[in-house]
Image (cartoon, rainbow, N blue to C red; front, side, top):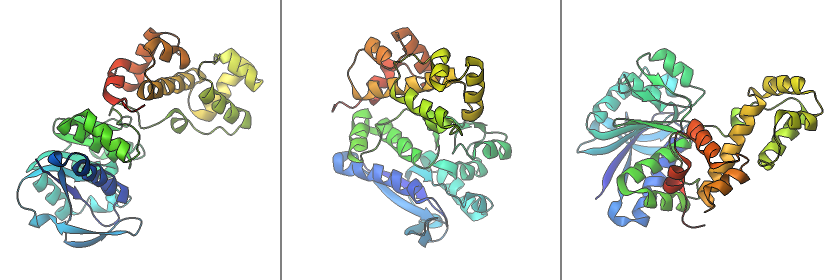
Length: 320
């Protein structure tokens, strides 16, 4: 069965928002010819459309699309604010969405879905830098800036840029199973298929870079030694500060308390161990510094909204 995927672009779109999903769907045809997708790029007018980095792609006109559509995907880009007022583009997206089995956006392409009325009353995500603006402009949209992607009914939205690959892998998994999605991920040498509930940010990305060199060194120590004593007294001693002063300065300079930073860092170590090893849960908990399977479970549910066992079953590569 061949599924038709339309990717909507416009002048100044983010090339990776189109190319990432296109390569995911394209590789399916090579790995599983009986389950292939046909990707088409569409725009308001047929012809060349220049991405924000200057690369030009050839698109068909939205108005000339005929026949059924399986998946409609809207790219994002720095120029999206300039195109939200493009009535022809927005109307074209709305018309195609009415014929599509499902609709998706990458990054701030969510603004175009919202402008077309497709996110009204739905939960959605976008690039974290644009989330507040999306919420402000479209009061009827429940914006969650944290997840990599969100599925609400037949509408999917994803976070910034490369999370479009995660979303596309999720669509492949929904259509053809997680085994094929994992093969595609390995074929593209990208991060193993991540759950949508996973945060857009790793711990270092979420935290600010400290001005203080000792705190920057301490961050590196925390990342490299998850099973060490990372209590506030121990960390304060390494930083040669009093506990009270350390807690205040660390929180001020990173935007995150020491305890929260350590917990998130350990949770990410546990996630990686679950994905690339067959270690039992008690070993994963111990090596990640979380101590016990019970703590591992609580922390995993808090940060990724899935259990450790579910995460391993769904996203672990069998080729270790």
